[in-house]
Length: 202
Image (cartoon, rainbow, N blue to C red; front, top):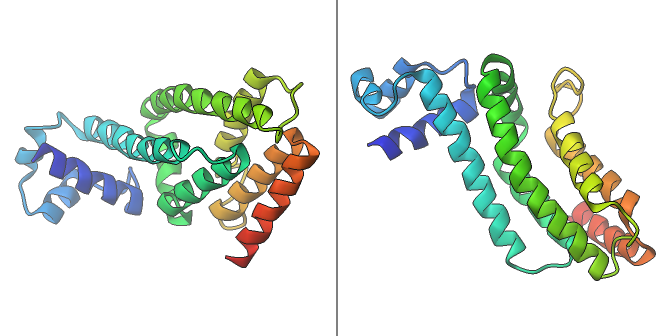
């Protein structure tokens, strides 16, 4: 039952918002009493925290599967982008904004978890890109990894990038291209151009 509650809560939070959804809403959706939910989760904050981590772990597992495919470094970044966009679209922007605004401690904790994972993955991607001749060998790997995470977090800030003007897909695409152009070799730029053309066709 705990897993069922977690899955339903995560689905509802992501669709309707972390603040908007009540424990009554979740109980009604599952056809159970609130008392049953409280047997597994102490309060809404506890459930929001579990749901946020659950969502991130699902995304993290998907990213690991992409990395295991051993694509070239730039193709890997595009594949990860596509996977994330499939799971976090424009409708997800408001709930994530609510999480940041109304549950700041949970948001900060999740940010720390995300950074550790993304930093490890990005360092590996940058090293792979250098080894494959797609990224410039003189780049500061640690710095580039940190600045990429900072930028990716920044473009999801609704105060700076209003969602009615900046859509998640467009900003993510623009940022990824911006990132790769800053570190790519001539060969890497050719690879980027090819991938961008395929993206437009699709």
